[in-house]
Length: 331
Image (cartoon, rainbow, N blue to C red):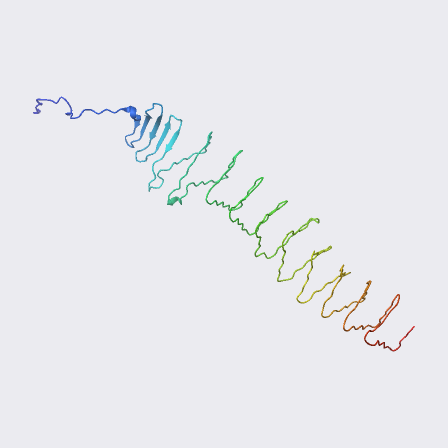
């Protein structure tokens, strides 16, 4: 039998209040209505109404330690919020695993990527595709802007376009084991200097018999070679100078015409040499007037014929005239 005695008096209140109750005015801040609150993870689903009575949202928050949430507001927006990134691998990421995806955006789409940590090589976006990647901009333009753009192709790089333009504010460099270009017409506009280094051989081949190579310049054209310099044509060759033509060889100069050689001087021709030798099977001089002026003139031949259609004069102004022979015939 219990020997506990009841109390003589009982309290009328839980505690003795020393200050008046405080009141909160909800018109100055948002109002919340919680639908669900988890016991194990402290997850929560609640509504939120702003003081204007119009702006509202439904928020689904995951485990309290993760900080991830999904927000659907009265503007028709859906926000996916992940938790903060920590030193633990994989934290704060948005992972999507599907068997396909169809997206239709009826307005402008803005996507911003911030650089990752050192473990991601400070990359902001990394896309890996195991098949073809096709992008189409129908009726618009595709712009790629970066401090440096690097395109790496393990097999081939193709640029196809109705018109392809490459513009560089600075240097434009091309390097390859072999460079081949094919075009109907080609035009280079160079306002500075054009130089070519290290070419073992330069060959220009044309298959059209009407083809031509032209150098038009108000300046000079200089060719300097250490080896042989050959010019060959199967047709006529013409070298013309308006003021003067100078040809010089340090050792020997040969002019050869297999069928005919003509030296033409409209106003005259001068031969100035230490010694002049004519070695020919037949030597013929035709002129309106021929004058020989020399300190010593020797004519040595097996046979000499002097024929004058009119008069023939042999005179010496300062000495004798000697005629010697086995027989001398005077008509």
